[in-house]
Image: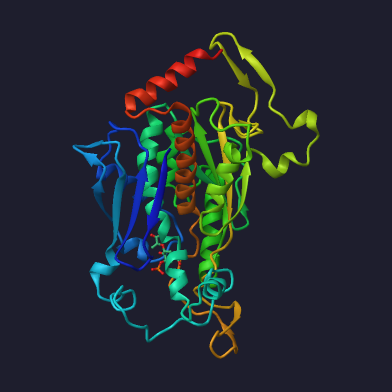
Amino acid sequence: MLRYLTAGESHGQALVVIVEGLPAGLQITVEEIQAEMARRRLGYGRGPRQKFEQDELTLLGGVRHGRTLGSPVAIEIKNSEWFRSDKWHEEMSPAPGMTTQPLTQVRPGHADLVGMQKYGFTDARDVLERASARETAARVAAGAVVKKLLAELGVSILSHVIQMGAARSKAVERPTIADLARVDESPVRCFDGAAEAAMIEEIKAAAKDGDSLGGVVEVLGYGIPIGLGSHVHWDRKIDAALAQAIMSIQAVKGVEIGDGFEVAGRRGSAAHDAIHWDDEAREYRRESSLAGGTEGGMTTGELLVVRAAMKPLATLNQPTLKTVDVITKESTVSFKERTDVTAVPAMGVVAETMVALVVAAEAQRKFGGDSLSEFVRNAESFRSSLG
Ligand code: EPS
């Protein structure tokens, strides 16, 4: 079973992730993980912290001489802001004490108020430090490792932004792995050149007003093995696992598999992917990808399509959202915390990670194996038994 846990606060010393259940013999380096994490910091509209904070990594366990050992892989990601200055040392100290600057003007749309109620806190920082999307840096580190595992099966997972605020791409062409460098080079991680300019304009206009923007990303999985997940029980359906994984990303409020909500408005005769037999390839193929590569909670081997809708960030550079101070109960506007205008391009990289973690966990469940060669051999054996 492939599983992982993250720990750490946004302005604490470090984030940590432990990934357990990886086979032995998978090649991985700190540089490869670092490269993937750098992708998450991309994107027009992100705040100053992304520019000065590099993700400093240490592989604490589970890897020897560039290969996994089959033991838990532990990765530490230092928050360089902690080491650059002592700004956060007292505020985030684990030693006994109390803050002198509690945050009490809770931000609507954040975990602040309900988290304080649930855990009995009087300082919103006790909630927001962990609720922050900084935590996704640890997930992406884990994702870098499982993407390498998936590459051994010929699987590649990528994402592109299809909507930023009101600007939506109308393009039907989808990027492949060969286009990923081009997508990453786009300041908004958009594959559609025509929509890119409109997206940047949206961000500029929101930034001018001190406002924030949401959007939609599409994650694509190529080369996904047939039969991951299962129809036999609700918690084994891979589309259900994907939905949970995507919804767990900070600020994501909607998820679609394939044409999701759009398909709901069509007639059945125009809503399904026709099947044919490809005599040359000796395999069944679907003629479209409306179902997004899953049927009955199992992957069909066709293109996996998962979309994630992100709400506009709830922290505004020009706070205008009405709230109350939880001490005085007086009306006020939410406190100002440094923030990004949008994190949609970065969210795409996180969504890739979440899809990769689900697909890898299901592939491990189906093909098993303690060493990489055993895992790949089992997958190939299953593949050659089909048709
Ligand atoms: C975040 C606010 C910003 C982002 C941060 C997430 O941080 P700060 O308030 O320190 O400038 O930069 O994201 C990251 C640090 C990251 O690595 O993604 C928030 O409120 O969630």
